[in-house]
Image (cartoon, helix red, strand yellow):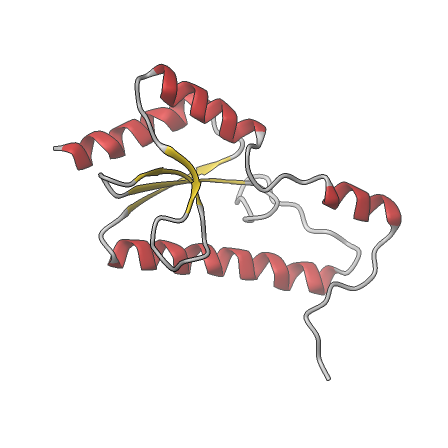
Length: 141
């Protein structure tokens, strides 16, 4: 019988992973501050589509813009992704699954008429805010 349970890890790794935040990360807060400073208002940590468990970091529901701030490790940033050596196959499957889920979310939102903006955690907050602001302005016209 096959299970999707994570294989045992050492205590230090387990403690480090338990401290990872799902929402309200530093890069997300920096982007939120910058967008708020520019006068943009949004909802935080909200599912753009009813009945969907996948939540966007920022949502502009009236304009149908969903913003995701993706962590370099968890979403396999092409510049900064790292690959754990312990339990490497499990992690490869897990991280590939995250990326596949991201693409499926993007496709579902696009099919429902939403625009998705993906920001990497390493991006400058002002530059990321420029991209979000452009998407919002485009949808407002």
